[in-house]
Amino acid sequence: MEIVDKGAIFRDVEEHEDHAFTEIPGTDTLYPADSVIISITQGPQKAIVSTTTGLSADGRGLLVTNESGQTTRPGIFASGDVVNGARTVVEAVAYSKKVAQAMHAYIQSTWRRRAVRAFCHPTGDICAHPAQNLPEMA
Image (cartoon, rainbow, N blue to C red):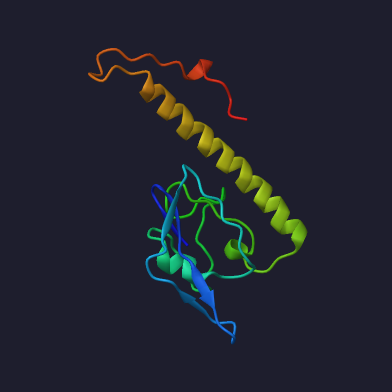
């Protein structure tokens, strides 16, 4: 899987008897998305960092984020063991709740900016700013 600006690209793989996987060339499929949320296993994920431009990892292979879970690539958030290393479930859930709130705020902000731009005349001469009247996203 590869995350790109337009969504996520998935590639078919074939599993062998030894449980190794081989990618099948020519099977890339783009799934368009404004946002992509990845749920992965515990611990560092070097493949994600090496295949997704703009993500940085620390010396232990953990994703670098700020206190809200934003990674070094704008619009990409991370939480859990891939950020903090192995911790208790309680710690992971507490931090993930904080990150989920930051993700919601980011999506709301992005949606509002796009909506305001949609209300602007193409010449830029007339632009309504209805952000205070925009509905919240469900």
